[in-house]
Amino acid sequence: MEEEHFDVRAADLGALNSMTKYPSIPTYHTLDPKNGSLTEGETVPFSGPVLGTEKVDGTNARIISLPDGNFLLGSREELLYAKGDLIGNPAQGVVAALREVAEGLAPVDGDVVRVHFLEVYGGKVTAASKQYTGTKAVGFRLFDVAVIADYRAVLGREAAAISAWRDGGGQPYLDEDALTETAALHGFPLTPRLFRVDGADLPRELDKTRAFLAEHLPETRSALDDEAGGQPEGIVLRGPDRAVIAKARFADYDRTLRRRSR
Image 1 (cartoon, rainbow, N blue to C red):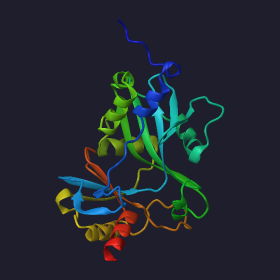
Image 2: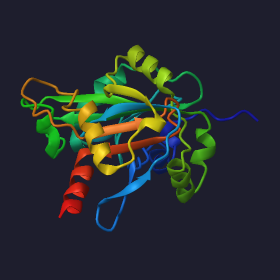
Image 3: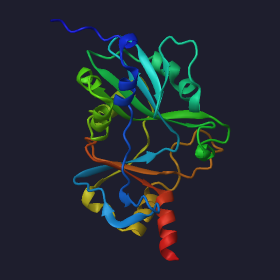
Image 4: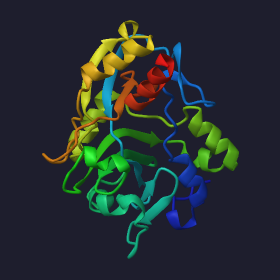
């Protein structure tokens, strides 16, 4: 029996939304949910090469390219626009920033769902926008791409099972080389690449990690104009194959170290 062609109009959009959400990234040092402080020495383990990229303070966005030639735009939590819509949800400026970009993307190659994950920032997106622009400019940076070949099986699961699949690492991401190639092919600016180090050389102490962040990212590399404040949010640590990933934010270390010094 021949498999039916995908049709977004007949798809379960709730399941599709869940399948293509970006999962939460753990903090490099364990974050205590009770007080928001980081725990000394308890880190995400890395081995081999580790790539450091700038973590941009904006809003998570998605371009979801579908097998039938259509695309959807989404924020971290919800779908905002479908190809051909006259009106899109204006939430956080995602549609305004990405609609023309999505319309210019080549369709997916084969029976897969492809998701470009981007950070839309600047403008009035977050309270930190002034760190990237003084003229309310809006920009975006690509930070991951997932290509989901078994999307039919995933979409057929119960809601809780789709969430567990996603949060358990089910989304297949491009490795660093393929991600860089895709960004160049489609003209997407990547989140700035800062360094490569061996996992054994990453600091484990809180104060040394804070110094490590300042050394490698003294100011943002994602400024949109000369009037930007320049204060960065943090660094994302990731293996070249993206099997391990963690985030380290200046604010988390500053808050923890202040409390410890009292």
